[in-house]
Length: 382
Image 1 (cartoon, rainbow, N blue to C red):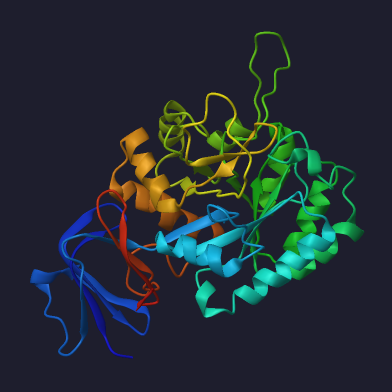
Image 2 (image 1 turned 180 degrees about the vertical axis):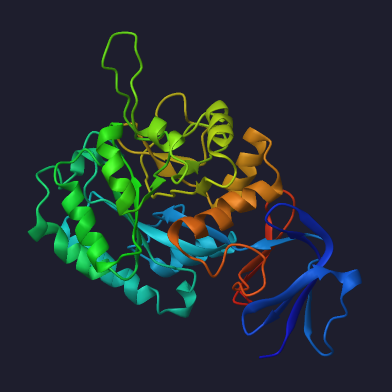
């Protein structure tokens, strides 16, 4: 394959910037990078001029359900392309607890087929937000068909259908029998990662999942319980557990108004977890319900018909912009939250940063995360 070089770029690295930089691409992989003044590019290589803008790793959205209007399970091509245009070169479509077993199996089959479609080449696996979450939490919780006991006959067909493509399984650790479910997941896929989600579990219920691969706090501080054992005494629940454990990454939905996560909380989580344990997600969801009174001007989150928050209308690049606004994080930091950290959390070790040997999934963007050019394995995307 012909060599390609992205030139005249500000490279966004793990912990610094390289001005007037270049990235050399061979066979879809980063072959070299650095400052232009230190390297003569090979003769005849195809050059892509970044025009002095930022060149960073492609964005990795591990948790999203939809575009602004359509669910992944209804139209994978439209939703994949929607997120691609915003710089998301890897996306994990999220399946939700409100589906029954047949709908889970149909959705898995449909998305597996979509992964072979060149138009959906950014689909990198699945995020299983369910089936066993706490029925007290989440949008559309009135329509939860998984409120009963955890039944192996019910869940094994889902695990078997998705074993090789499900990167993350979200669970509520307080559900009786959840450890048996987790062991069955790990038996078929030893690399599977678990997330605590829609839960009011206490530490003693969460700790047994750590050796089984609990590594993510799903939309941290959203749809998580608050334990109060004694009057005027705040207990310890999911958020505190995620904050405490270094090995757990905290997903954050960062909307423009700080409704999902208050800006002060964003700054607090950043201070506690550190920049290498934060993952930005879009958690985009499709809903046509009206905004409740007082929220009519909110344009980047959704509501369900009961007035509860129902995910967002975000793309990951906009979440990065919001994170810079709310916390003062740098462009280097937010690329970590939206590319390197999610890649590390779910085991996508071949991408997520500008480094020799990594996939040439790259985006060119301005300082406000307006994406100009998207590349997957060195190929420009339409």
